[in-house]
Each structure stands twice: as C-alpha cells, then as structure tokens.
Amino acid sequence: MSAATTRSRTPDRLCAEAVDLARAAAEEAAYPGVVGEHLGMVSEGDRVVTHYFECKEPGYRGWRWASTVARASRAKVVTLDETVLLPGTDALLAPEWVPWSERLRPGDLGPGDLLPTDAEDLRLEPGWSGEDEPAPNSAVSDDMAELVEAEDAEVTAGTPANLPIVPRRGSIASVAEELGLRRARVLSRYGLHVAADRWEDSFGARTAMAQAAPATCVSCGFLNRIGGSLGQAFGVCANEFSPADGRVVSLAYGCGGHSEAAVMPTPPRPPLPVIDETQVDPFPLRPSPDSGSVPSTPDDSQSELGHS
View (cartoon, one colour):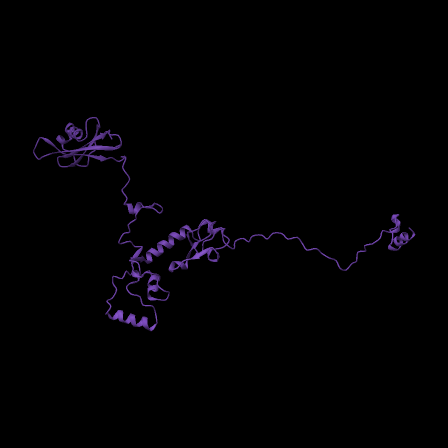
C-alpha cells in the first residue's frame, strides 16, 4: 500500500513528517539495504505515529518495519519510541505452534521412543497399587481374613504386586489380577469408549470389507476372544490371510477369510461299475460250425494217439 494509512484521528504533523528519523531507526535495527520504501503511517494517539517500511529481507515476504515516533506536549522535537518487524496482511508466517501431545499420531512411536502419559489423562483412572492397603490390625483387614478362611480361599502374604507367581484361580489375588488392581492406573470409562470407537472405525461393521463379507467374525473359527468388558464386542483375528490378522476386530466385522465362508470342493470320484443281474449274456466256449474250423475234442485227441 503506497498511500498513507491513518486512523480516524488526525496524525500529528511533526511526527508524520519524521519519515527520515523512522527510516534511520529501522536501518539501525536491521541494516541498510533491507529497508524498502515508505508504505504509510498510522496515528497511534496524540502526538504518536507509526511509520511502516517495506522489508526486503529474503524469507520475510509481506513483513514490514514499523518505527514509532512521538513528540512531547508543546515540544518541537520528535523522538523515537520503538522499532519492530511486524507481519502484514499477506505476510508469510510460520504455522501455529501445536504441542507435541496434539501433533502425535498413531504409528509415530518408534523403537526406543518413550511416550509420557499425562497425569490427568482422561483415558485412565487410578487403580489399586497397595498404597491404601488397610493396616493388618484394622477392622477391614480382620473381616477380610475371616471371609477368606470361611471360603477356604488362598491367603497370600503382601499385596498382589509382590506375588512371585501368577495367583491361583479363585483366590483374592487372582480377582485383583482380573480387575486390574495390580496396576497404578487402569482404563477409565472414557478410555474404554475411545478405544472401542477407534477399533470400530478400523475393523467394524461399517467398513467396506465387512459390508462385502459373507459372515461376521462372531461365527469365525479364527476369532480369538479377549477378556474384560471389551471382550463382549471385540476379539483378535488369528487368520494369517485376513487383512485384520493380529488386529482387534469387532464381532460384527467380517472378511472373505471367514472359516466357514467357502468349503473346499471335494475331488471327483468315478462312479461304481453297474452290474445288470437281470439278463444273461451267452458266451460260447466253442466257435460255431459256420466258422469253417471244428476244434478237436479230448476224445478225438486220444483216438489219434492210439492209432499212432
């Protein structure tokens, strides 16, 4: 913009004429040669004017040098206030900074990378780590011990996290293992829903593969069921020829690799020979007389031997 830009208030005359002072300040902040032509001025207040100059620095397209000058009341000398480099309306700007936690996408984590989890992550909620375990002489602990003895359950020393082996099924330690009580944090209700929505979008009933599948995964022999509440709607595919092999799939998902989708054709078998026992086919042991030769009989052979 080559014309002078002013606000509604009238700029101070002496400050508006101090273009050389403003340019000298801009060249001192940068260096001569990168400060271009005067683009205009803006009245910032009483006896305060900002002059704009073109920036010729490579990589700063659309930026402007801004030098603000001011004059004291009843003074006739204009002084410099500040000089800065500001972007214009068509300036080339860097993209808005986004925190790493928002830039991270699935698949970005590589070998050796560590992904810290926010302490206030909505996907997680506190579990049971043993820190709040009641004292051995507390009423809660005594009641629990009596209940364990009544049910003849296994009593283990210490918290479940200190167990050297997997707890026996049916024991309190195994129940703690099943409920995720050996971990400091477990999935919250929000975390369960977020995971279910993500898995449903990838391998769910609305995908193109599932729409064209002959049957769903719930009836497939390659489906490996999972535990927990998510196991009611999801499993793991174990078909190496399926596009979802090793992935968590919805029970309503499906593909052409369904175990019962197609049956291998049986090899053709030749038909059994048919024997017609209702008719008799004659089979002569001797040729007929019309053939011109009469075979010798056993009697004739003996008579010829006798004459010889």
